[in-house]
Image (tube, rainbow, N blue to C red; front, side, top):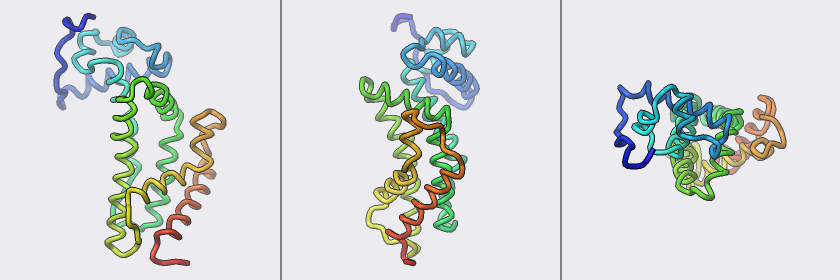
Length: 213
Protein backbone atom coordinates (compact mmCIF):
# COMPACT_ATOMS: atom_id res chain seq x y z
CA UNK A 1 0.00 0.00 0.00
CA UNK A 2 1.46 3.35 -1.01
CA UNK A 3 2.04 5.88 1.74
CA UNK A 4 -0.56 8.28 0.28
CA UNK A 5 -3.19 5.54 0.35
CA UNK A 6 -2.71 4.64 3.99
CA UNK A 7 -5.38 5.81 6.44
CA UNK A 8 -4.25 8.46 8.91
CA UNK A 9 -2.89 6.95 12.12
CA UNK A 10 -5.33 7.72 14.90
CA UNK A 11 -5.04 7.91 18.63
CA UNK A 12 -6.24 4.61 20.05
CA UNK A 13 -8.70 4.94 22.93
CA UNK A 14 -10.41 2.43 25.18
CA UNK A 15 -13.01 1.59 22.54
CA UNK A 16 -10.25 0.41 20.23
CA UNK A 17 -8.41 -1.77 22.75
CA UNK A 18 -10.05 -5.03 21.64
CA UNK A 19 -9.17 -4.46 17.98
CA UNK A 20 -5.65 -3.41 18.92
CA UNK A 21 -5.21 -6.57 20.99
CA UNK A 22 -6.59 -8.67 18.14
CA UNK A 23 -3.99 -7.21 15.79
CA UNK A 24 -1.18 -7.68 18.29
CA UNK A 25 -2.16 -11.30 18.94
CA UNK A 26 -2.12 -12.06 15.21
CA UNK A 27 1.19 -10.25 14.73
CA UNK A 28 2.75 -12.13 17.63
CA UNK A 29 2.14 -15.44 15.88
CA UNK A 30 3.61 -14.15 12.62
CA UNK A 31 6.74 -12.75 14.29
CA UNK A 32 7.33 -15.99 16.18
CA UNK A 33 6.81 -18.10 13.04
CA UNK A 34 8.64 -15.95 10.49
CA UNK A 35 10.87 -13.62 12.50
CA UNK A 36 10.91 -9.85 12.13
CA UNK A 37 12.43 -9.76 8.65
CA UNK A 38 10.18 -12.50 7.29
CA UNK A 39 6.98 -10.92 8.57
CA UNK A 40 5.00 -8.60 6.30
CA UNK A 41 2.12 -6.29 7.09
CA UNK A 42 -0.01 -8.30 4.67
CA UNK A 43 0.72 -11.56 6.48
CA UNK A 44 0.06 -9.88 9.82
CA UNK A 45 -3.28 -8.52 8.59
CA UNK A 46 -4.33 -12.00 7.46
CA UNK A 47 -3.30 -13.60 10.75
CA UNK A 48 -5.16 -10.93 12.71
CA UNK A 49 -8.27 -11.16 10.56
CA UNK A 50 -8.27 -7.49 9.56
CA UNK A 51 -7.67 -5.54 6.37
CA UNK A 52 -4.34 -3.85 5.71
CA UNK A 53 -6.16 -0.54 5.86
CA UNK A 54 -7.38 -1.29 9.37
CA UNK A 55 -3.90 -2.48 10.36
CA UNK A 56 -2.36 0.84 9.30
CA UNK A 57 -4.96 2.76 11.29
CA UNK A 58 -3.50 1.28 14.46
CA UNK A 59 0.17 0.86 13.55
CA UNK A 60 2.23 2.85 11.06
CA UNK A 61 4.63 -0.03 10.26
CA UNK A 62 5.73 -3.42 11.53
CA UNK A 63 8.46 -1.86 13.68
CA UNK A 64 5.94 0.06 15.75
CA UNK A 65 3.74 -3.05 15.92
CA UNK A 66 6.59 -5.25 17.09
CA UNK A 67 7.63 -2.69 19.72
CA UNK A 68 4.07 -2.51 21.02
CA UNK A 69 3.90 -6.29 21.38
CA UNK A 70 7.18 -6.62 23.24
CA UNK A 71 6.54 -3.65 25.49
CA UNK A 72 3.02 -4.73 26.38
CA UNK A 73 4.07 -8.30 27.17
CA UNK A 74 6.79 -7.16 29.50
CA UNK A 75 4.84 -4.36 31.13
CA UNK A 76 1.78 -6.55 31.68
CA UNK A 77 3.79 -9.28 33.35
CA UNK A 78 5.92 -6.77 35.22
CA UNK A 79 2.88 -5.07 36.71
CA UNK A 80 1.48 -8.44 37.73
CA UNK A 81 4.73 -9.78 39.19
CA UNK A 82 6.62 -6.78 40.61
CA UNK A 83 5.23 -5.47 43.88
CA UNK A 84 7.22 -2.52 45.22
CA UNK A 85 5.01 -1.56 48.15
CA UNK A 86 7.34 0.32 50.55
CA UNK A 87 5.45 -1.19 53.48
CA UNK A 88 6.71 -4.67 52.57
CA UNK A 89 9.74 -6.33 54.10
CA UNK A 90 12.91 -5.33 52.27
CA UNK A 91 14.64 -8.68 51.80
CA UNK A 92 11.41 -10.49 51.00
CA UNK A 93 10.60 -7.91 48.32
CA UNK A 94 14.06 -8.20 46.78
CA UNK A 95 13.81 -11.99 46.61
CA UNK A 96 10.30 -11.90 45.16
CA UNK A 97 11.30 -9.28 42.59
CA UNK A 98 14.48 -11.13 41.66
CA UNK A 99 12.64 -14.38 41.00
CA UNK A 100 9.87 -12.67 39.02
CA UNK A 101 12.41 -10.66 37.02
CA UNK A 102 14.45 -13.69 35.97
CA UNK A 103 11.32 -15.67 35.15
CA UNK A 104 10.22 -12.76 32.97
CA UNK A 105 13.56 -12.55 31.18
CA UNK A 106 13.90 -16.28 30.67
CA UNK A 107 10.40 -17.33 29.67
CA UNK A 108 10.36 -18.88 26.17
CA UNK A 109 8.36 -16.17 24.40
CA UNK A 110 10.30 -13.48 26.23
CA UNK A 111 13.57 -14.87 24.93
CA UNK A 112 12.29 -14.84 21.37
CA UNK A 113 11.22 -11.22 21.68
CA UNK A 114 14.48 -10.12 23.28
CA UNK A 115 16.57 -11.89 20.64
CA UNK A 116 14.57 -10.17 17.91
CA UNK A 117 15.03 -6.75 19.52
CA UNK A 118 18.76 -7.37 19.84
CA UNK A 119 18.96 -8.49 16.22
CA UNK A 120 17.27 -5.41 14.76
CA UNK A 121 18.52 -2.73 17.19
CA UNK A 122 21.79 -2.14 15.33
CA UNK A 123 20.13 -1.12 12.08
CA UNK A 124 17.01 0.28 13.76
CA UNK A 125 18.38 1.93 16.92
CA UNK A 126 15.09 3.66 17.67
CA UNK A 127 13.54 0.24 18.32
CA UNK A 128 16.23 -0.69 20.82
CA UNK A 129 16.09 2.74 22.43
CA UNK A 130 12.35 2.67 23.00
CA UNK A 131 12.46 -0.92 24.26
CA UNK A 132 15.20 -0.01 26.72
CA UNK A 133 13.40 3.09 27.96
CA UNK A 134 9.91 1.58 28.25
CA UNK A 135 10.82 -1.87 29.55
CA UNK A 136 14.31 -2.13 31.05
CA UNK A 137 14.75 1.40 32.40
CA UNK A 138 11.13 1.44 33.55
CA UNK A 139 11.91 -1.57 35.76
CA UNK A 140 15.13 0.02 37.05
CA UNK A 141 13.24 3.17 38.03
CA UNK A 142 10.50 1.18 39.75
CA UNK A 143 13.00 -0.76 41.86
CA UNK A 144 15.02 2.41 42.53
CA UNK A 145 11.90 4.11 43.88
CA UNK A 146 11.36 1.24 46.31
CA UNK A 147 15.00 1.38 47.41
CA UNK A 148 14.76 5.13 47.94
CA UNK A 149 11.79 4.61 50.25
CA UNK A 150 13.83 2.12 52.24
CA UNK A 151 16.72 4.60 52.44
CA UNK A 152 14.36 7.17 53.91
CA UNK A 153 13.12 4.54 56.37
CA UNK A 154 16.71 3.96 57.52
CA UNK A 155 16.90 0.38 56.27
CA UNK A 156 19.47 1.03 53.52
CA UNK A 157 22.40 3.36 52.93
CA UNK A 158 22.58 4.12 49.20
CA UNK A 159 23.91 7.21 47.42
CA UNK A 160 22.62 6.27 43.96
CA UNK A 161 19.47 4.14 44.00
CA UNK A 162 19.34 3.71 40.20
CA UNK A 163 22.87 2.33 40.25
CA UNK A 164 22.02 0.02 43.15
CA UNK A 165 18.84 -1.17 41.40
CA UNK A 166 20.77 -1.93 38.23
CA UNK A 167 23.46 -3.78 40.20
CA UNK A 168 20.88 -5.99 41.89
CA UNK A 169 19.16 -6.81 38.60
CA UNK A 170 22.48 -7.67 36.94
CA UNK A 171 23.61 -9.91 39.81
CA UNK A 172 20.27 -11.75 39.67
CA UNK A 173 21.07 -12.58 36.03
CA UNK A 174 24.40 -14.20 36.93
CA UNK A 175 24.90 -17.64 35.32
CA UNK A 176 21.24 -17.65 34.21
CA UNK A 177 20.40 -15.08 31.57
CA UNK A 178 23.33 -15.13 29.14
CA UNK A 179 23.41 -18.95 28.67
CA UNK A 180 19.65 -18.78 28.09
CA UNK A 181 19.53 -15.83 25.69
CA UNK A 182 22.37 -17.29 23.59
CA UNK A 183 20.61 -20.68 23.58
CA UNK A 184 23.41 -22.49 25.38
CA UNK A 185 21.05 -23.68 28.10
CA UNK A 186 17.28 -23.94 28.53
CA UNK A 187 15.34 -21.63 30.84
CA UNK A 188 16.64 -22.05 34.40
CA UNK A 189 14.68 -24.10 36.90
CA UNK A 190 12.93 -22.58 39.90
CA UNK A 191 15.62 -24.00 42.18
CA UNK A 192 18.39 -22.43 40.08
CA UNK A 193 16.66 -19.06 40.08
CA UNK A 194 16.06 -19.24 43.85
CA UNK A 195 19.72 -20.02 44.56
CA UNK A 196 21.09 -17.17 42.45
CA UNK A 197 18.54 -14.60 43.65
CA UNK A 198 19.13 -15.54 47.30
CA UNK A 199 22.87 -14.99 46.76
CA UNK A 200 22.21 -11.65 45.03
CA UNK A 201 20.03 -10.55 47.93
CA UNK A 202 22.72 -11.42 50.49
CA UNK A 203 25.33 -9.50 48.50
CA UNK A 204 23.04 -6.50 48.16
CA UNK A 205 22.24 -6.38 51.88
CA UNK A 206 25.92 -6.78 52.77
CA UNK A 207 26.75 -3.78 50.60
CA UNK A 208 23.83 -1.48 51.39
CA UNK A 209 22.00 -2.79 54.46
CA UNK A 210 22.22 -1.00 57.80
CA UNK A 211 22.00 -4.25 59.76
CA UNK A 212 25.31 -5.93 59.01
CA UNK A 213 25.76 -9.56 59.98
